[in-house]
Each structure stands twice: as C-alpha cells, then as structure tokens.
Amino acid sequence: MIQVLLVAFGGAIGALMRYLTSLATVRIIGKSRVLTGTVAANSLGCLLAGILLGWVSVVEHPGENIVLFLTIGILGSYTTFSTFSLELSRLLKKPYPELLTYLFLQMVVVIGLAALGYLSAILLAGRIYG
Image (tube, rainbow, N blue to C red):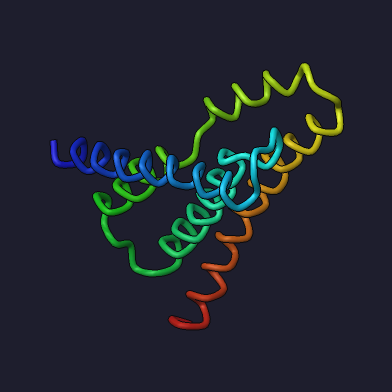
C-alpha cells in the first residue's frame, strides 16, 4: 500500500512540475507549435530519468520505494506521451517543416537526452566510487 501512495504522491508532484514547465516554456520562448512545454518536459524528464537510472545501476540502490516515487511517480507524471500524441495530431495539418522539427525534438533529442543522462551518471559514479 505504501508503494501506491508513493507513486500517487510523486504523480501529483510531477503533474505540478509539468504544468509549471508549460507556463515557463511559453514565458521564455513564447507560443510555438514546435517548442512546446511538452518538448521541454519530455526533454528534461528523460534526461533526469537517464541520470537517475544510470546512477542507480552503478551506485548502491537507494531502495525500491524511492525509485518508484521518483521514476513512475514524479517522472512518469512529468513526461507525457498523451500530450505528445495530441500535439503531433495537430501538427499533421501544418507545414511539414514544423512536423518534422517536432518529431525530431521528441524522438531523437529526447531519447538522446535519456541516453546522455544515463551515460553521464555511469561515468560520474565511476569517478566517484571507482
């Protein structure tokens, strides 16, 4: 039961972070069909997920409850596939350069950031604990 509550609490935190990221993105970049809060949240969230999972794979595991809270709870709520799908469907009616830029950001940059975070955490942990 505690794990369910940790995921729910983490989800509430992640949802709030996601909303604030959208507001900040509009404030910093302005309204854009391509550089959206979803791109920002997915980019940052995947980078953080990569860092966290890379660190946990090398350093002593902090415990299942903490990992559930951070990954499924916070980061699972912070990143969003459903909004990505909605924004993508809207861009299907727009010029192809916008669609391709959005797809590149979401599919290449975001996944690349997850890999970068993972590898960075492994290298850093190796230097600290190696």
